[in-house]
Image (cartoon, rainbow over all chains, first blue to last red; front, side):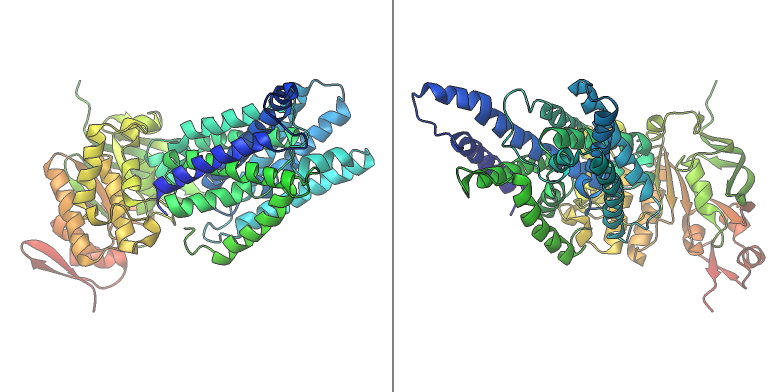
Length: 317
Length: 256
């Protein structure tokens, strides 16, 4: 498959899925039905946009994290970033339960930033050639932060919230007025595209980046901000979706490589296709009930991740 | 006032956790010349070249490159004055050769390449014999081909100064000779080059100026004929080295 084909394929699939997503749901839409406009405007269009924004932003955040830590087998979801963001949300819920939603968002984003920065600092001393040490460190960090969040959540009787944030991202609760923070995640992904060359140069290593006149620390910080914003907005709005940031970047890199300026739009579209596709699938299989997109992704993504690991770094270098 | 062209180093030293890597050093490197930096392993050659190229920020002492203080000049400005290629580590990115070389134009075009940038990339690809493999991914190349791709990226930067740390690594003898000939052409066009070399005969054959280092100190500098003598090299490397002559240049013999 050539790079141009991937462009056409992902754009076409996204268009078809978006159209299907507008048509499929518990309520039936018939032409001329006065309820149709309401269903579309309040539920179907917001839900479709939410899935597209989430998938695109998570996939881009995955690429950004992979570039700044120079390892293909990590994504925010396996590096403790959502857990850190949940810890921030939990803290603000306990300390200031009546805080406005934007403040909760800000605290979640700052906590995610702290978690991502901690991960980046943690892995700095790991040998770069041992490609599986970095994801292992991420999973360990996620476990530690997640355990702390669970402990506090149990004692404060907030486990229900925590499971919504971390366990199963899903879109059935998305209606107009309750998904708009995802536009911030989308904007962060767009920011990453503007800085695409910087991330690609940073991935050449700090020495090469310095020699080309970039500040590796500044680019790293920008990347962490993108990762934190995307993760926090997704965690708070729809709940974390696993594997999107891991599988999509690896698939696209296999075909197109890592010239991010060219690949990021395809990464974003493919991420949107994956999430929207699984959300749609979840609406169809036990219609009129639903299976959360995150649940399907968890199962399908785990298989795909095992396949990536099994291939090892044969062409992941 | 004329700005001094060349590299001036004064009082430069470097230590890692209390261990001295580079003793306080004063050195002037002439512009428009190929300067070879030689010496045994651990002599501090890489450290010195990395300090000059501001890859390691200098803590004590001062480095001026064509009059620019590397500690206070913006890294972006310096990227248009000097290009540096280190002993590069393993590359995680999956890039095509042309994409990698094009990153050498970043200091000039910031990701918006114009015709001049594309021409520079094409020149660098041609210069290092990479045009036939310009569309291939780096992870499919041999070590020597990948090294040439990195050299081409550095060359595409087209800076007055070029600083290369052991650029002959992985290169076969034809490509090693071609690289030295490329450096000589750059010099003839007015360029200035500092190159860390392990193979003394490449220093003998191509350098205008040789700086010898040992234990973090500069122990000798001068023309190849001055520095590359049997007694000096034998003491520098602590092994017996003979020096003959070939085509008017020193010929270093150390293989037996």
